[in-house]
Image (tube, rainbow, N blue to C red; front, side, top):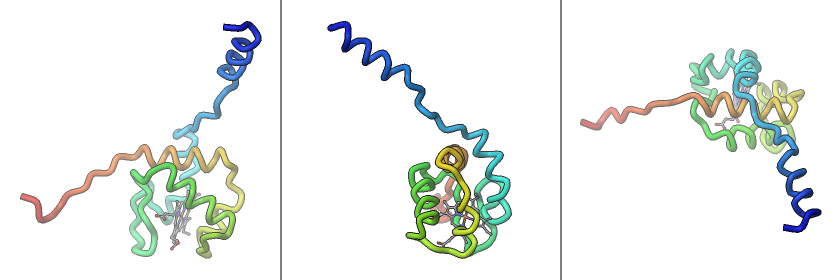
Length: 107
Ligand code: HEC
């Protein structure tokens, strides 16, 4: 491999990829738990569960609330000052929670 190219590749690989931090997401989720429940299972029938939801969907939903493409008086307010990293960390935390589903009619 040509030297210049391998140097470029090495630099690209060395650039730290901002990995999401579910433990920070857990801390941040304290202010979400009033509505979404401590482990992402909501009691209020108007509030969706977040436990086990895909990180991609959670991130997209939060960004839609930030951009005003999705509106809800509670959510639009709470997500206002979340940074991109906060959103990724929150999504990583909620998506890491394992959910089990029981079909009541299965036997
Ligand atoms: C005051 C109550 C409240 C708080 C606090 C709250 N939420 Fe919500 N959240 C809601 C409601 C209500 C909805 C459903 C809104 C709608 O109908 O579109 C929702 C929707 C969402 C959705 C979309 C879920 C889906 O299935 O479409 C995500 C993601 C979410 N909230 C994340 C968060 C996060 C992260 C926090 C904390 C930073 C938070 N919420 C704090 C009430 C709350």
